[in-house]
Length: 277
Ligand code: GLU
Ligand code: ZN
Image (cartoon, rainbow, N blue to C red; front, top):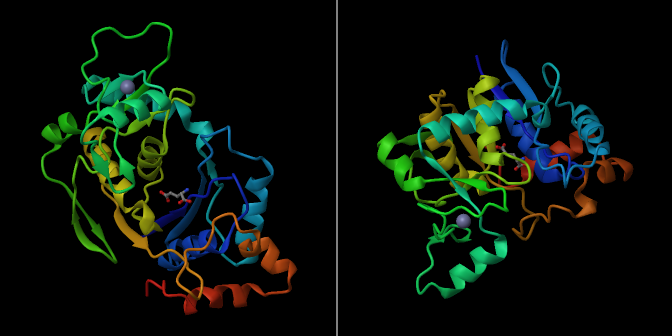
């Protein structure tokens, strides 16, 4: 039995790129006894707009991508993420970080060789091993990636498109696992929920390949099962440019208003360079 999920953030309209991601997950679970779930990634309350929960579901329905059960909302699950963070604290693989964004930038600017990740410089580890915590600030919690690496041993993941990928524990460095304002993060929440919903196949855009390294580390530390992965290409326009996320012309609702049918929208995907077969 296959269980997949689509995990949109209710921070904007459903666009072609999101709809494609939903269809990949739907198609993979389009067999007897398989399940396709929807989970809203809404922990970042500063960016959530309440009207988008229903709008996104309405667009999925219109596209014929029907889901099983009630969609989950991550904001209802904060205590589960807190529990996972406690487990990581007990293992001493997280540490409190008191840096502001500006302090991190200043620190990086002063380093002769800032540590580099796939998306730019990494946190330089300023607060790792900190003795005197400032009392006037709440901390964020960061993964101690070196310590984690020493506990887990070699890990990898199976990707339906990219093959067998070996985990590089320091790829994203000491990432934040709990933001000081929301108490959790995408990485922690997605790992806890993929396990809680017994997701067998995690499908998502290949821009998130580096994040999967962090997720496998967390699964191993927290004793959670390892799903299979499928990181699909991102939808591009005819010239190969990645679609601008917030380009309203590509919103499913706009296409519908222009009289384009759901079948035609889905055909746009099959002619894109991104069909995962
Ligand atoms: N909300 C994420 C996105 O839209 C999905 C992340 C995931 O599927 O793990 O890219
Ligand atoms: Zn810090």
